[in-house]
Length: 267
Picture 1 (cartoon, rainbow, N blue to C red):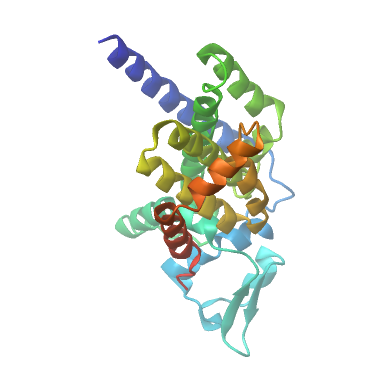
Picture 2: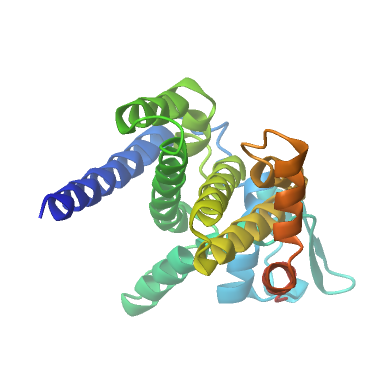
């Protein structure tokens, strides 16, 4: 019963944290308009896949004149070749897909006239941003609890949020990749540490999913993979043991399969 009560308190705590972060995101973005460019340049580049899937397609003919100029550099509407060209990966769009789809469904059911790239869709994406932020903080805290007590991990979790640029990228720039890179790398740290302690396959699968998504979101995140794999390595023997574990046929096949599925472009 004690464990059940503790679990219930945790659910309520993190649910309230999601709500608070979501409200703060919307309050901050109404107050700080980022030079009237909340959905443009990089942010529009990350998002462009969803309007293409749900509304305008992947041919230039589906986009109105001036669409490219409105969103800024990053996306090119090539009308001569009838193509939409972007320099961004689809990682963030994949994470936002459930929330954008929900917004599109509600708009259709209630016959709402909203632009495919608008604050209406940003509102729903911000629900996802709040959930992802709490997932990242929770995994970071659970990873810390392998090293420190629960109270210290909680204090450190909040210190990380309020004392670093994470605060800015959650509340002010929820369409940038930084928050989601943090989430995936936190999940990666926690899942691999859990796998080392338990040997449970689902922890390794979660590691592969998190690392693959981190790389898809921002390819330079591959530099963090050795940090995840070699965490708490204290000797050459530890290092060789982890390398051997990662190269075990079952793990190597699982990692390659998940990475291929995640990275393979659906468009």
